[in-house]
Length: 316
Length: 319
Ligand SMILES: Nc1ncnc2c1ncn2[C@@H]1O[C@H](COP(=O)(O)OP(=O)(O)O)[C@@H](O)[C@H]1O
Ligand SMILES: [Mg+2]
Image (cartoon, rainbow over all chains, first blue to last red):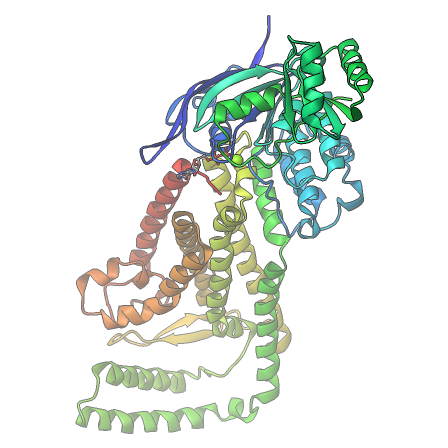
């Protein structure tokens, strides 16, 4: 039996007759990383604000570890750590004193735990500096640190990669995975699908406050949707003809100087490459790309919103 | 109790800011400055010849009074002259020098410094809620396992604690500085109170000083409640500072302008300056007495706190 740590039931938020979150329901399992994916303005932050009680719920319910947030807020929030939008911290205090503020009021946070968390987010070198000297990335990491202090089993991070450098994003992904493996449910929101794809076990796609669908991110190697990109030096059209003639069933398309072919297994890729080379086509590069989530996302949201990073990672 | 940690947090936040220390240092420097200046500048002869001087002043006042009556001047002015004359004659007769200085006298004279304390307390109280909204830190605070009223209460109590501590520090400093400058004696020293047509009364200075300490606690509580309410309603510290300062300083002027209106005594303005009522009722508005004003402030404080907590509990936090 799967345990659900966070459950949303028909959650709705209306502000002045405008529906911002519309009948949203989903459940997050213990130990999974769950993504909220949607373009800017989709209602992700509004949903998170309702979950943590910053704004009132117009309709529906939120259960955290089985406790209804509307009925017993204090109990429900005991096991929650969160960042809502940018982590805003006390500028006039050091990072450490900021953490102390939260350590003091949360149950069971020892001094050792504080040091452990600081080490985890890699802020030891600056923890005694005033927060006003911090970069956005450092604030983000301090924000994560305060959310983790009391070992919450529900961790909610709203656009946590904002302001992080690539190394920071990589580290974040790794320790979120570590937390999830230890049973924490992690909820992350983002408008960047590539990020969600790399980070999450499941992703809820949200648009105009409505749940569009929930996708499992399975082992991408097995996906039928893997595509292979052959980079061609020379006449791409000619190259396409070569493949189409020899493999009538094959789905081949052109894009710039690339041929995009729908195959996934390594043998077929090698075979196609051989055919091209034998026909005298210059193949300068081969890449396998998984586009499932991106395609679904763009299909669903019809290119709505502002997608900063639609490129999808390459699986080497 | 974990809940007390909320209070510790607020206290730490207040004292982590440089301005807090300036607020505490400034009154102390002023007190020392006044004492030093007084020591250096005061003419020592005055102490010896105070009777002569007082007789002269009384004669001058009497002339002025005759003049004023002939010209049918302002009644308030005439009354003031009459009470001055009465007071000075009593002092001459009973040998009570108005110039004899002790630390208690110094404390009585320094009592207006409470306005400065009030001002600083307004700044801190107006900021403690609204700055968390403007900086967005309120989000990080509210998502803890504490009901909102507990968080607001911790802020209120922390501000009140800060106000009281600051006031006590100032009192202690005044006593100490005054004692070093003028000696710690004079516990039975008296001063003269004249209330309109009543007889002249003697009252100990110590009595006044302690009454003033007491009423300032009450005033500060009302001031904190007012700043709190405005800053929670408007989420702006500047609006809160403005309104509270206006109530505190412009209040007296407004009361004077509207002294003839019956309802004026029920406004917050009219009841914000309790120290003027220690020696009896307000000279302009006879219905204003200490017990009345304290009751009015208690009612206002309760209502303002009720509004603040209700609004805060329901507010959508979009910071
Ligand atoms: N207080 C508000 N009043 C009116 N509209 C709001 C308010 N807050 C957010 N919205 C609207 O709700 C929508 C969702 O906002 P938000 O939850 O911040 O989106 P996301 O986090 O997915 O980018 C936006 O269109 C925004 O304009
Ligand atoms: Mg958002």
